[in-house]
Length: 82
Image (cartoon, rainbow, N blue to C red; front, side):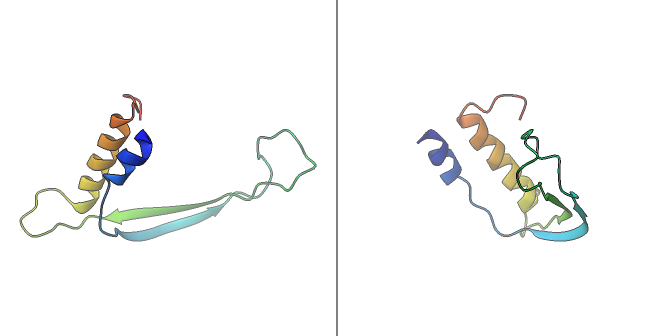
């Protein structure tokens, strides 16, 4: 309940992103120690966030999102190492 309440406090417009590159995991290394299952196929997408500013604002929409996100995480006891 506490987590849902904190996450409900987040509201943000869509971010503009620029894709940098995609890296495939190559399968395997799922960490489950069982070679009988389907191997992992992780994919990593690296992007850059394009900072946009609303009229008269000194913080970008992304900076405001991060501030709200960390406030929400702190509200549920996220601690200093987040």
